[in-house]
Image (cartoon, rainbow, N blue to C red; front, side):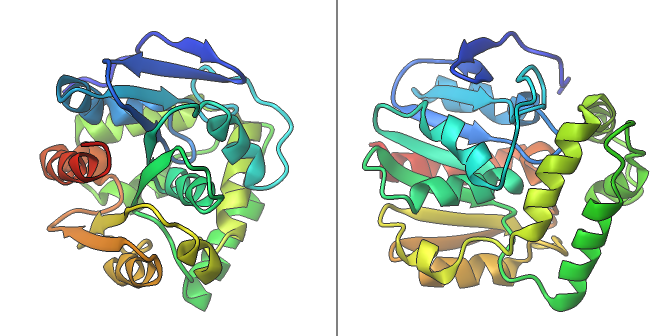
Length: 259
């Protein structure tokens, strides 16, 4: 598919793609990306009878950069949008935001899906991600080569090209701020996972080296209604690269949460 820019509406502090009608599903993207990263999910979910809301993270896409101070700075504007029963679906840092909100006890959260979510990184991985975060330059666009190598290896694709463009376009101040919050987090705590009372799906790729299948299984085991699923032959950008498999799992999960 082509990853073209879509129109936005303004919702409080956030700009968001809004598609379809029906029960609310909120899709939260990862660091350096934008709402269009969910381009392969928007129509399938909207066509299945859901209203799909995809906000841009602060300083990403068309949402302006505001002062940020920790994870709550990213979660609070999203939580402020939810005034009806909804399912949160987050990818990477979006998964961190989604589980944080779900653990808050908001009664409107009827389900949460965490895609490629990190949990208790090994020490070497923790040091590596922190080193990358602290080395980022907030005064100029960062070279996306190393990031794209982690996400796509050597494979050329429209998905790789789209991510390269988004990573180069994002405000470098916003990228450093968000990546630092992501790097300094170790994922949801055991207490937060235990506080998620709604159905909780932890979905990752079998070939994902950072947010590993074992992390998803461990989180699912700590959430009272947790479940883990693994997409074969997929890695970090599976919502783009393995959309059909991801969408099939998400649609089953939505039927469970918002029948």
